[in-house]
Amino acid sequence: MPNKVTMINAVWMVMMTGMLAATVALYDQKVDASQVYGPYASARAAITSQY
View 1 (cartoon, rainbow, N blue to C red):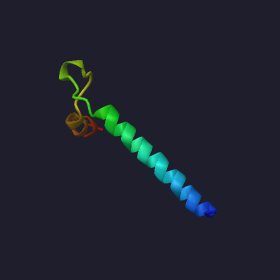
View 2 (cartoon, rainbow, N blue to C red):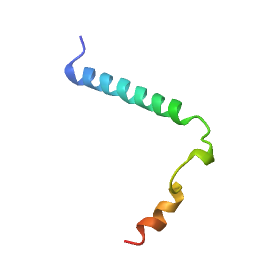
View 3 (cartoon, one colour):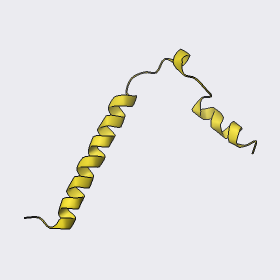
View 4 (cartoon, helix red, strand yellow):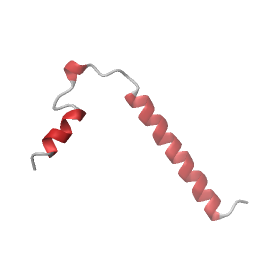
């Protein structure tokens, strides 16, 4: 029987792999730019530089 550290590492790796797979699956679709509200990610630097 594996020890506790090995089991914790196995559970951690399974969780991280599942979360990565879900992220890739959710963000894999092409986003229509006409449905995106708010500034683009490249505009964040200009917005934060005013403070």
